[in-house]
Image 1 (cartoon, helix red, strand yellow):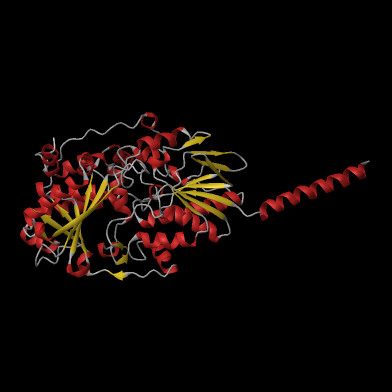
Image 2 (tube, rainbow, N blue to C red):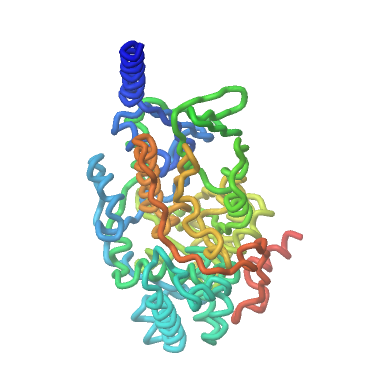
Length: 504
């Protein structure tokens, strides 16, 4: 009897071992929701590792949020290493950036100033900008680890305040304050809506990096070129598929899109937080994640491309690159066009973009053309037309890019880097160092793919090591709207406020 039991036990053991071995030999499967660079990178990395991957994209084509410009400025290999690695792998050639676009310019009351011109002709403004940069650099230097920005009480306190109040304390000259406000809102959101700690943390990430390295080369065609290269190598890409529900259990995950279901072993959700909030989860997301979906701030940004048959700024060829205006025109880029023409790319951001949601595309283009024509009288005669892209009004985006508001780092920092059972998260908003960039999107996709490999191998995924200060009152508080006060130098109705009155 004992020998018979041993024989049965051995056979059962061999059978179980065979099942385990068969499970390991089985090709793992994954669904990736979201066809931006983050989702494409995650899908490509998994497929390259032998996984069977299905990518689902709600729009008609993959590629995500791409700019209107015919090219995209990218950083050096030191600043954006993963992006440059992908470009090298896919043999996508870039063009060296001319020196003129490596610096920052300013458009003050219609006149263009480079940094050297500003110091000579507008010394008070130049001094104010330098004082701002010095103060911001000191804040950035106080952050020892940009991956753990709120590591002590003093830094934690920075997250409870907004950038506008800090700027008030600097007492910058009016024009300098207007330009600083424009710089901040162009990269993040209104200073009054932005966590001071987040502004300092992002400055810490790029501290010591020459500005020229941020725009060291140009990628003709922009990010869609890389997106197409990634998508071309994927075996299964389904567009026009809007996911409405996700369920998971110990056996796998199921994704619903209308009446169609897709099943796999694992899932990567590479969609913005607003789109994520429109998906039903079973089991439900934890309370902290649900709070982040509703409470995390996104910066608002729209893009308008004004097309001209000739450069309307005459001999002001330096009017190119990153330009900040004190006249409400937003951040400007001069985009080269064919046959001697030139296009002006206007990045409308912050409350300017929010306000313009009430107006039609043609109204916005006409009013910005009027504004440009005031400074450059040949603008109207050379005008050919416009293109517009509204990220802010897209219900799936809810804005442009992540821009933590006051108190939000304390509540939600690195929250989306940790998988929930069989689901990993990707997207620029999940990268703590480079949110809002191509590098951040790619990094997040690669990280999500690595996490699924670890889960499939039965290994624990490392939890981000961050300091969590004991602040029960703050942790339990709901995200409250930030009281906004008019910034110094902008107390009179600006261009966009007057525009609103015009159409009432």
